[in-house]
Length: 93
Image (tube, rainbow, N blue to C red; front, side, top):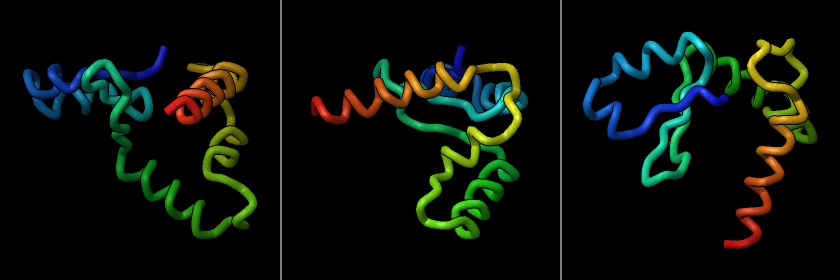
């Protein structure tokens, strides 16, 4: 299961609701029943931006993230399936 929170929950509880979830990785914010935002810690953001600048353009940030040791939350197959579903939804729009 992804680390998610609704926008209305953030509005009700404040940023502390997001802070609690960040201990488990990036937080996906749901608004109008859709994933709209992803909240990262500053360290995670810096790591992503540094990796993007220092790697060859043929390698994506996602590929670099998938090469990291798994945290035990999601398998590569699950992530690949989610990404494919997202790509399919873009094609339908």
